[in-house]
Image (cartoon, rainbow, N blue to C red; front, side, top):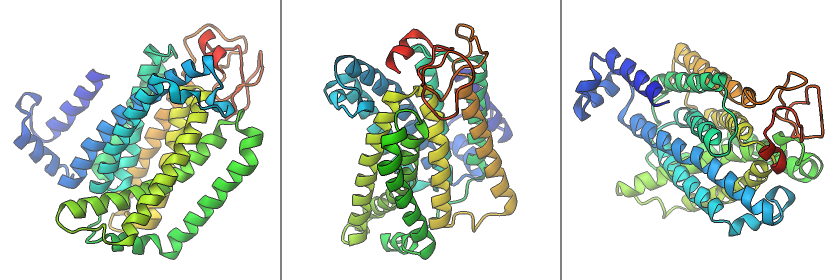
Length: 375
């Protein structure tokens, strides 16, 4: 993976006429500007990559804590909270908080369409760590999926729109209260309420899309709130205090509420389903809804040409392809499956045949014994 990153860096530097041995702050700054990446977008890029490292690691550490807590108490997937007494879970939580803080700051500098897709990098770190720490197999095609994620991310970074200049948090509030975004928010809240009160009791333990759907839908609203608070902090640090406006505090309350709801259902998902499956599916759904919300609220594509938008969409599709290839081949390379098909989303007692998509079935096909014990 390090070789891959260095290879891509070498290609980027060569496109600017700079050798990797001549890399320095001045030359690197020149290279960034020559590629059309603004200073703010570059700062957001660095913060987003740092965020991916911490968040990707947190999935594995939290999973380890949930496994230990589930062995001695009621599992989180069954409504238990014994993981709160597990140091491993708190270590993972701290790692996630640090990653989210970096992600928080990234949204203050760069548009959501740049920052959010870079979350694919956290999938790479999560999958690699899961291979070595949780003994969840990573097939060669999983590595290819990682490569596709990196290529797609690079495409988006090079063609991302410039951050919209904001002079006050009131401008963000005006965008958030326009009819288009109000309709989107209403639809999201209705969908989340239906999932929580109707589908969680029935299908929460067998269909991963229920938990992940709640996290993803609320996550899109969280990002919009985070971006608003981030802009307020950025302006406040520059000398324009934004905390005198009630809008800043309202955005803060929204962020806290949405985050708490996400953490609750993400814990349930992690405790019930395979980590290598949760990470990519959560990323795909979360990124899709976030880009949609950002497009509606901030209208980031209005200033771009059609060719730039198409390139960004192609980069996003490339990342989606990489994530699905990564999780689909996760169980390949283990012991042979009688049915020839390794279960990915399922967990019902099955001995053969392909299991239905987006479910979690305790299958004895293509899974290691440790994962069977947990599921």
